Image 1 (cartoon, rainbow, N blue to C red):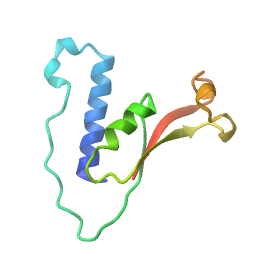
Image 2: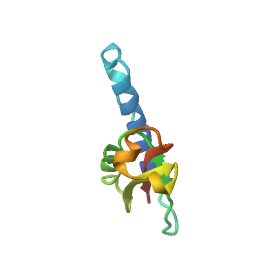
Image 3: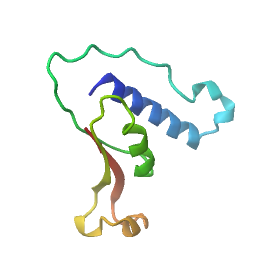
Length: 103
């Protein structure tokens, strides 16, 4: 996984944690310090990650703007294919997680 994607995951995780916690107690902890990018790979390649983190549209919106990301596609992980519909999944009873596939 590229360092840019790792950084975006770290930032998203921090943002989600800060939203869930009391950010007023420590506003400086809202976003982690930037990391230095790893050197470019010697040959082009693709890697895929699937992450879940609350509403998939918000997660997708973050990653589709990260340099180097080819695609960010919302969908579901877990559960049964028969119940993978937004209205059904929203009940919380299908075993699905709203997820994003990042290439």
